[in-house]
Length: 85
Image (cartoon, rainbow, N blue to C red; front, side, top):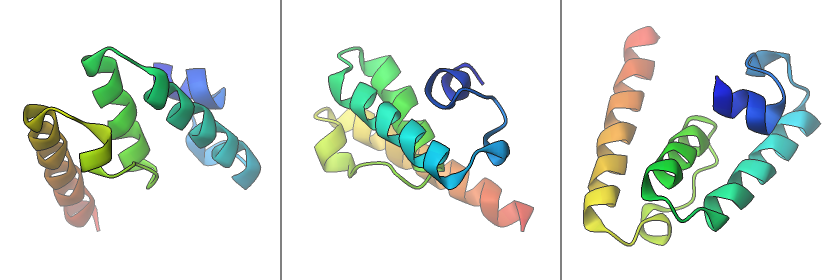
């Protein structure tokens, strides 16, 4: 919720207009690119993934362990989505 409020101005992303959503994603991608802390970078990437805007893993993470953690997150998130349908 804190990341949503920080980048989108609300914790309820469903209330955003398309322009507000695009603007928040742009701010999030910018911060992702500037972030040096691997934990925060991972968190930003996960949110971008959930929004369908995550950059490629190979471009996002130099460390193989981080890429593997991102793959695990993708698998878990996709499984949750499939189970919810």
